[in-house]
Image: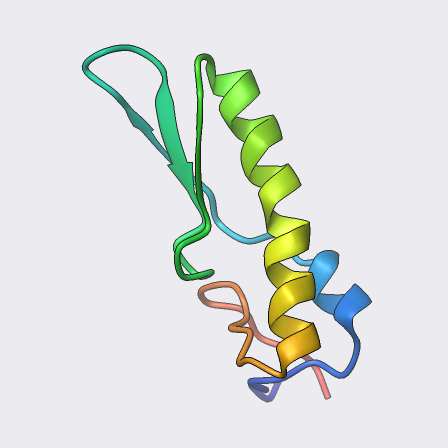
Length: 82
């Protein structure tokens, strides 16, 4: 297996499963983030709402980065077969 640091189509990135981290807040609710996608952070009152929100945020994050030619990292520990 070889590692690769760039895919060739936006759809490839959209279909990747990035690790998601949940942080319970003292006031209630959750902050949730995709650490591999810088500043891709959202909130939700419940775990389910937070998950829905971060997954909804992932697509526009990737689309914007793709449109502007920004570097899009692969998920942590991701290896592609060539």
